[in-house]
Image 1 (cartoon, rainbow, N blue to C red):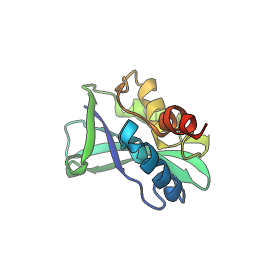
Image 2 (image 1 turned 60 degrees about the horizontal axis):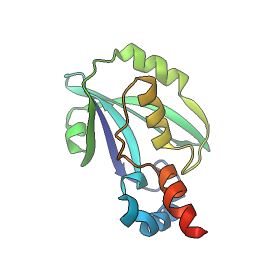
Image 3 (image 1 turned 45 degrees about the vertical axis):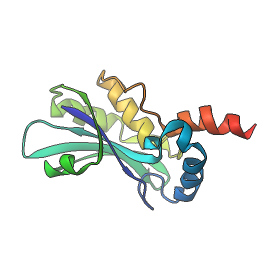
Length: 150
């Protein structure tokens, strides 16, 4: 099983210092788009074992860097914001292969090249559809904030 989970942004988590900018964006656009876009996105792969595989990307030294790690199954249960995406048995080797390819994804940008874009790119590589109603930061800036600023 594959899940898209999100966690609140924290200093050093995903946007590394741009939390204040995101707070401003959130308050100005939350009513139009909800607020899942203003969170750190990660993917969880559940193989039915005691541990789940978590994949995410973060700002490391100014670069968007992907990673994987294992956590106890309780971690999946503890995510308040999680969406079931697909029932797929993706070989761990396939995920490892993709993560090697996606480990360095260019310069980090808090709306254009972030954990959300990285998660979407990984899902595309795995042929898993992103829910149409799952709004990311780039979409919010493009569709709600930039037009309002004009």
